[in-house]
Image 1 (cartoon, rainbow, N blue to C red):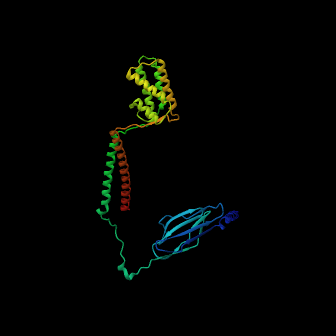
Image 2 (cartoon, one colour):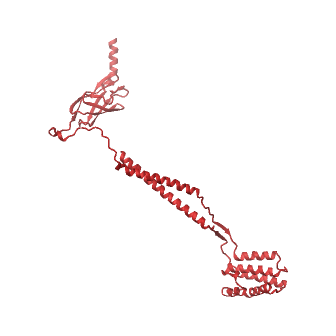
Image 3 (cartoon, rainbow, N blue to C red):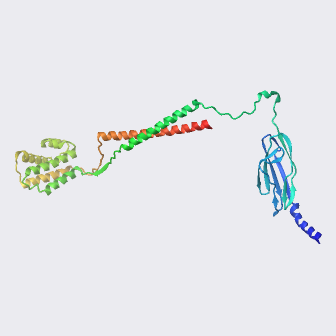
Length: 344
């Protein structure tokens, strides 16, 4: 009965091991001393079979003279990297793997390691290995880097000093303003409305009334026509206007004549005459005014001579700081690169 059960058990395991196979191949089979070759060990086994691959450690001798560099396994495949430092023809023993606990071996391999031929008749031309030498310190190699480092340090101190100067010297803040401005005829009409509001037409002080009225017209003419009417006599103003404008000059001449008589000859006028001269002034302004002129004016602040010098010095300081900073960065890059070149 035991024999029958053993036969049944072995007959069940036979299909699992009969199909198993271990193969090994080496590439290349010939190499120079110190080169490397790879051995690929593959186990072919039925699906579900338990496979145990051989284990190897780095620097392990596969056979005397042949050393394992490293090994890696992927599934049922193992790759060994071999090397050798002795010229010879080496026999590599078969590789053993277990499939379902049963050992199976691959075929034998061979590896040929070729030595470098040396002409022993000329040994005096070959020099043996030398010990580690300490390179001497040469000031000529480091002097440029040293002085450039000193220069870089000086420039950094200069930047700090200039920055402190710039920080201590407060900036001059200027604001450009855009202000609304009245046109010449708007200013004149505003002043005439004020004369009306002050009831100067009916005032007994006729000299003050005509002085304000003619001054208003003079300022209007000066801004409208561009000549110094405030510094000219009445006749000079009329003559100058004759060259540019012919409108309402008769009424304007009468107004200035009356004003001169009141101011300088103590001439007395009637209320209706004052009203007529006021209307003539308004008519002259309305007939000569220029519409559609810009009503906004850009007002730029006027800096004193000292403020201009301060502003200029700040610009110079900022420019110098930027230039020195760039020079420091370039020097630092050059020194680091040269230092790396010396130490590597």
